[in-house]
Structure formats: C-alpha cells, structure tokens
Length: 123
Image 1 (cartoon, one colour):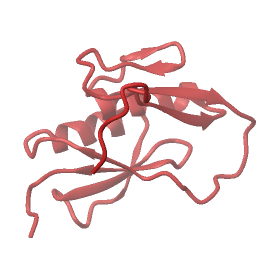
Image 2 (cartoon, rainbow, N blue to C red):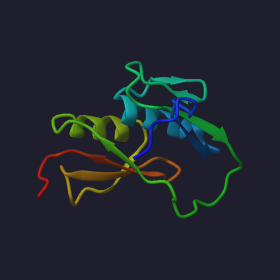
Image 3 (cartoon, rainbow, N blue to C red):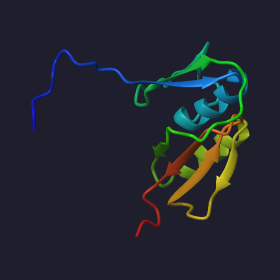
C-alpha cells in the first residue's frame, strides 16, 4: 500500500444530470439527509456534513439511459423504514422491496435508482 497523497482531492461531491431538478431534489434530500427540505439552490446539503454534497447539473430532457452509477445508502437498521418513507413522500417510488429490510431499491422521478441498505436480516 502506498502513502496518501496530501495534494490529492479531499472533498467528494456527486453530480446528477437532470432536466427535472425540482422534481427529484426533494427525493434525494429526504433520502440522503432524512429531510426533503435540505435543498439549497442546485444542491442537497447535509447539515451534519456526513454525506457528500449532491448537486444537479441541468441537462436537456432525454430518455432514461441504462444507469451507470449505482448508489447504496447505508443507514442504521432502525432508520431504514423512516428514510424510505421520507423519500417516497418526496416523490420517489419503491422499485423492489423483496430483500427488505436488508435492502430496498428506490427510484426518483427521473428513474435514477438507489438502494437503502441496513444490516438487518443479512445472512
């Protein structure tokens, strides 16, 4: 293993291309922070600074391509259902809950998918 490069980037931000920021921002804020109102302009901001900044890049409307980025959000076993409920209330849909509470697949209004994962019922 090599040593860490002190000159390397030290901040991680996530960018999501969308023509529907207003429709999907509350979903991602609820999912990532637990509160759909944690949207500041084009950014989802976690007040606790535990989750990277998610920002929305404006793009032209287009058919949803095969997703190339897969997001897994790990939360405490006692927080999974609340986070899923908040994300659905903010415009998301449950795509697959056949493995719940271990993991549940959600999608935003653009079809971007995310798994809400917990340690519950892991074998």
